[in-house]
Image (cartoon, helix red, strand yellow):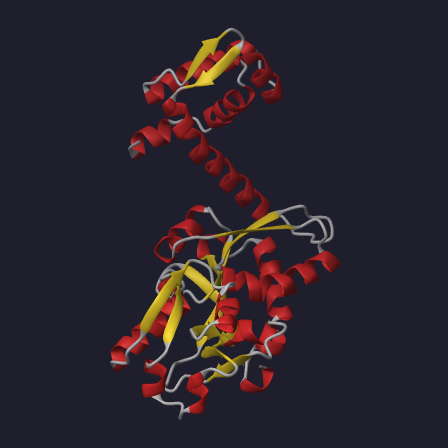
Length: 314
């Protein structure tokens, strides 16, 4: 749809479309909208003219969507949600009474470190607030924040640094090497050479911290043998505990793990920069009082870790 057609498009038609799609009945849709059935039928004709498709096929009293209508439903729903959230953002936010759902993009490592703290805080001050997490590819994150697919992102997101997104610092993290207690490598001097002798369980290339580590290892010309690559990190400690495989692992997560006496944390035998975990929002939604409040909650719960997770925490 070009700009001129978009200017002429009546946004009220989206509400009619969604009502008909969900009700599958013109009479029920009209009742939900507070309109007459002829008014809904007229709006449906305008929609059909706009998209050059019948959109809904009548079968008795039911209206069944065409493939074109099915394709339109999710984008229309998302558009209405963005409009609703934008309207809500102009109002004050009362955490004690709010039932708002916050959609947060984060990895499973982010969930492990963030959600226990965040949900513990919310149950005390905002019991009606709901958190929904989502996986978003790193190269699609800026768009997801801009169009409202997610409200915010939490994590190490270097690709957002030079965009219209704003990140506020939560904590500093670093990567370590994890092996089992009693691993043969612990009987040797811990050097780049002994590191190169290990076989690693790696995780998805979408994990930005791991991507940084792999890039650094390649730049240093260090051998890095991958025995297996997984999509999720949470199984890594269990694999390391039972095998001679190693894993590069976030110190923040290791610090929160229980029953890790049979695991050994080894500092990487080469320089690896720390990285910052931030709370990211798009500048279009920077005035949203709900997101401002949520950022404040996260700032509070992560205050003890502002300077990072240190060796004595492990």
